[in-house]
Image (cartoon, rainbow, N blue to C red; front, top):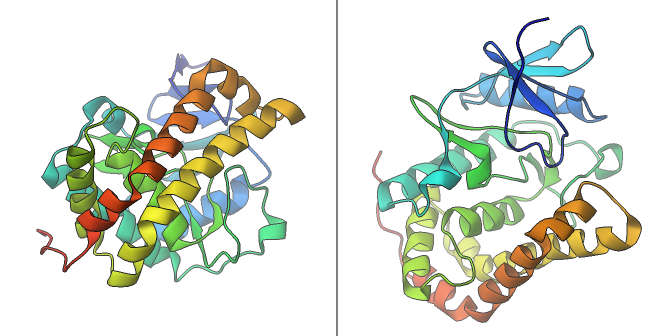
Length: 257
């Protein structure tokens, strides 16, 4: 048996290990479709960990991408925020070319909006991005039907560090850089402040309601402090919607290539 190195994370996917240049973790009902989605993104030019099938124990295998997690680099500077914004835009644009499954055929792990329009990662956040020789989003297990706005709201809020206790002016400036990097149009910019408030509230509600139903891993995550984090974050994002709207108003500044 090759040496297994336990990796951090895996809140929603259980134990995650590295063996050589691969990551191994349990399969879900969505795994075949998720691997197909990631393969299609790679064919469209998006860099993502290469799906490698299953090992002898039935675990899914994906390419291991070396580097450090973006969450350990927060707050990101202007250049990094714009770069990540461009990465999210590339994923969304490529996803528009991939057939959308019915929501009923997909086991949704994370809060999903009504009327999905494309498949999204659904957790494009600093804890799922590796920074190294390559900048790559990892952990695609939560991918599924969503919308561009819903997915962007989550990534913009998390990468811009719109969290309770952050100086509002600094957070608003980071948000502007991220959204400028994405190249959002006037409609998306106008919708984002409310969408970010709804998305963070939905994350808190997922965790809170899971305590009542016993749904894991969310019930345990709620007890471990994730519930309080998303409650406070949702309140912060909602209270300062006007500041986010002001930051996003007007023409976007050109994004460096």
